[in-house]
Image (cartoon, rainbow, N blue to C red; front, top):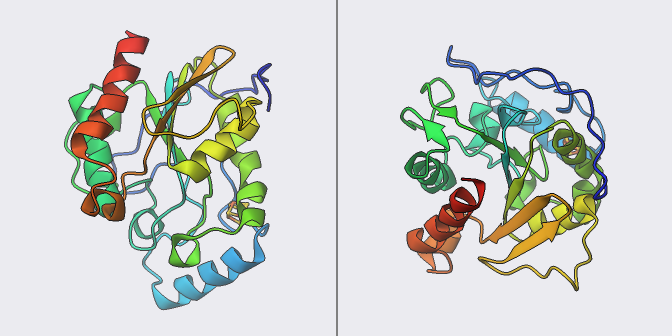
Length: 234
Ligand code: SF4
């Protein structure tokens, strides 16, 4: 995708599920048995045998395609989104992310780290650069390239999109390619903002436990990114 975004046929607003199941996949989400990354398919197959009650599939985007804000993480965590089927749900990263979204009015309800906690997003959608859980949380470059098409399709199906928050450098790099920005003109830095046509790209360090435990990212630093997004959208 480039600055002249295609506006693929978007379905109407879609409510997040609150019936105990992960959100239903949007037409732009990959198939549950997407075969495109052999290493990740092997890992997924192994996890399905080991933990048959887990989601163990490409994790669909969460939230309304009609939202103005999109948040893009790296990939599902093994015991987080890969287990529960909802992005950033079930491991530490979700606590800071959803707590922040609730604080700035991008979510309603209570986050209880379960897809049936009733939490809904407000004018906000969450996706990942890579939809399948990678071993050791480290997708290969070929896997990042392969899955980029799904993120591009998701972005193209968001007709009102104005703001994207990239969580971490891999997400940032993937988004540069989709938005037609050059890396030298839009280097990754926490708190940086880049303009791509009518879309603003906001960089943040990933809200992982590692980054918060090591002090790379503080709650205040993370809040500052979303405070800026909120102010720009209002
Ligand atoms: S990471 Fe993306 S492209 Fe690769 S198998 Fe999973 S859904 Fe398909």
